[in-house]
Length: 80
Image (cartoon, rainbow, N blue to C red):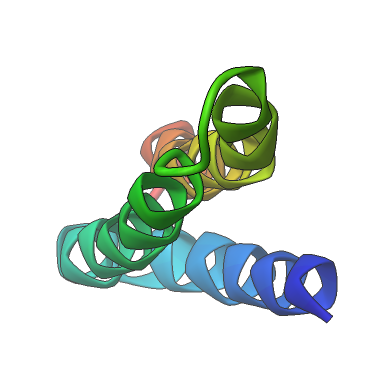
């Protein structure tokens, strides 16, 4: 369920970043904040289990930032 939610958020963010580049930064930061809280909670597990539990959240944060960056980059290359 988490994967589907992150994928849907990334697609929404990509479209928002393409249509309104400046207004897309706030939702992007909000998504990264939420995923960061999940990662911090998962990393509290003892030993290497904490590092392993945090990895999905780190990857999701990376996907959210890449989605927003790609939308803004695509908008900047438009001929208009």
